[in-house]
Every structure is written in C-alpha cells, then in structure tokens.
Image (cartoon, rainbow, N blue to C red):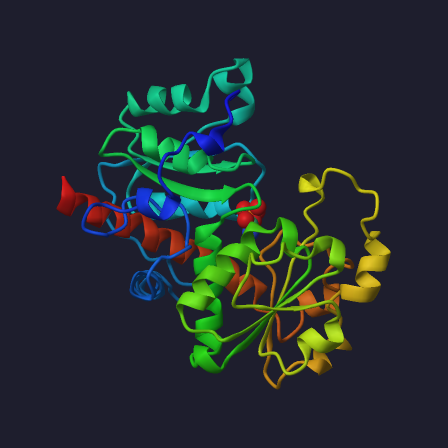
Length: 333
Ligand code: CP
C-alpha cells in the first residue's frame, strides 16, 4: 500500500459507517455513535454470555455469510474472539495468513479485499497499523460488504471500547456517577480513544487521563476528560482504573521515553496504589500486559482485577456487533 491512505476516504468514518437510515453498516469508530446504538450493542452482548463451564451461546445469525479476518498487526484477543464469534454465529470463517499472503509481494489492500470479495467473503475484520485503512476499504467495497475495524493505528479500536464499557457497566451501573481513570500511554492508545468515546456517550462525567508529559495526549483530543500527571491526583477516589501498555512500536524515537523500571516506579498500578481508589474499585487492562511495568502481577491477578472478564465480554461484544450489522444489512438490501 503506497498511497497516503488517510486522504483517500472522502467522508468521515462516522458517516461512512452508516446506512442512509442511520443504522450501522460497518463499525469503524465509536466517535459520535449514539448512546442508543451503544446500549443496543451492549444489551445484545449480555445475551451472548453464559456461565463459565457451560457451553457457549450459539446462533445461526450469520449462516451463509463468510467472515474474513485480515490482521496486518499482531493480535491474540481480538483475532481469536472475532474468529470464535463468527463461528458461534454459524458463519464460514477465513483467517488470512498475512505473512504468506500476496500483500507481501506488493498487492494492495484493496486488491486483497477484491480478491476475497470475489470468493463471496462479505464481512471483513481488519486490523492495520495505517491510519484510515478501514474507512478507505469501506468506501471502496461493494454495497453488500461490511467492514469491522479491529484496531487501527493509534486511532480507533471500537470493539475494545465497547467491551470496556460493557465491563464497567456490569460493575458500576450508575455510569453518570462513575469515576474512570485511564493510566499510561494515552498519546498512542487507540484503546483510550475508543473507551473515551463510549464512556462520554454513556454519560460518564468524570474521566481522568493520567500520563507522563511524553505520553500525554495532544491538547484538545479529549475535551471532556481531565488530564493528570501523577497517580496520586488522578487515582484519588476513582471507581475504575484502566492501565495501558506503552506502545513502543508506535513511538518513533525512544530517546526521552521512561525505562520500564522508571515507568513502573511512577505510573505502575501496584497494590499500595489501589488504596487511593474508591471502595470496590475495579482494575482493567486491555491486554497484552507487561507485568511489572504498567501493572504488578499481584494486581493483575488480584481480587479487584476484571481483566479476564474483559476478555469474555470481548467475545460477546464481537458476536453482538456481527449479528447487529448483518441484521441491519438484511433490512437494507
Ligand atoms: N486488546 C487487544 O486488542 O488485544 P490484542 O492485540 O491481543 O488483540
């Protein structure tokens, strides 16, 4: 892919992702997605949960459809859960092995998509390090095709934002009164951005972003949030703390960046620091975790951690999104 992708999509993501009646065709971003749509997706996801140890929920909502997973960046949680979600909804599933695909030989992403479109793949789950790729694809595919953003550069990870909102809502149903602290590399985090859009839409009023200056977001990126430079001020009385990994793969020069030890000393979520939080506060992490850096192993595995619940919810959210967009598509075509 040689052209500057971001300039190729003519419309903003939030317009591109909807059918003319406003219902969701693709899922590209949570920015400006209505609270109503988010709540519909979260409520639907709750229906796909079943008790641990029981058989997972299944449905034939995607029977006859083919979901292609195209992950041009590493992933464990998102890729595995989209695959399981599609299979549990009775879709055919293709996992393209990127390292042996013709993209390595210089084939453009659109030619890859068109090739798979010709094999009647009709839902594409895309993760890419380039900004604007999911929207660019969405703008250029046939009308019956749906694109789901599975992680786009530092910009957007909408299903992660939904699963984070779902997890917070399960523990803190009074969202308007809930204080959420997001700690770490906010500047390069698509997770923080998507969580922020979901939480603002759902009425969360107290969102704190805690980061050292070199990992803080640009001014104006998070207008509803309050920025903090220390854990002591940002964690005080919070009901939720979400620790983020430093996205070293997105940082051009490591000069001036904190070492793992420095970072843990100043910003790591440790058992002692949990005392700053409100009673019954929960600890979240999107994964993958660097234990001993942004979070101690003791906290990650401790009683306040909901990290595994986030993973479980991630699968349910992806089932909800897949079934929702296919249901919408049926009523349009
Ligand atoms: N949270 C997240 O996106 O994890 P993966 O990179 O493993 O998919």
